[in-house]
Length: 320
Image (spheres, rainbow, N blue to C red):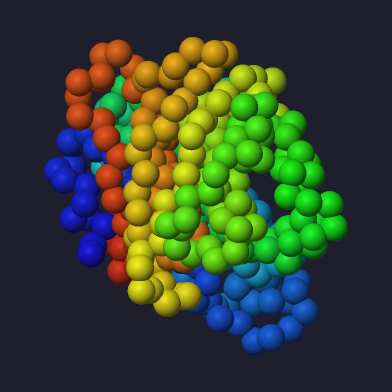
């Protein structure tokens, strides 16, 4: 589906949720890691040309090709969402707010732009969530891949146990979440996980993904002093779609109901969802809605997979 079909009219308020799989993009000749990244100058020249020189430099500084590709697509998505607010690509400048969150700072002739967006990337997948036309609405997203670190995770768990592995991450989790992960029963319906440990890991990464999306929505980093005061309780990971193969990124179960607490009080102005993507990925979206938009129909929808060539490159070249 064309990305333009999901955005409605050019001025209508909407929530946008996109992702791109960078893994098949820009194949290079096998070489050492740094040389593979530098090959992007040729194989990804069309995409790189759409970025500013500092952005190009930031992409090409990466040591691993997979990280450089995710960085490149992350930049493209941020420019792309700004152009959806009737801003030409050449003027889609990406800035940062006072907390360091990427943003578009409107000027005298672009004060019509009301936009908040956030990106995430993990194991080749890059996601973007945006709120267009909703003043005061903040958004965040995160992507996790359950099996990306499976070998390292299993090595630690085999030696020290699952509870010890959870404790390694306890500094950025609420005490109630740590206790839940160690003691709560595992849902037997999990697809995408076979063993008990795999199911425990999948639930851990589900909680991690939800927390990351929430924290990124606020604009604070994972070292924010209030991290342990945020609680996302009773989390079960969404099941992968039944019958899909290992390379599929088809959407599976979507879970929308979570018990969110901050400093012991229920959070009522944030909507959070977690979606299974293929057998190993999960993607989260979080929206903080001010009182004036409480009844405005601000809701999360489906994550849409974009086609880089059709949806972004052709559009950007026509817009520049």
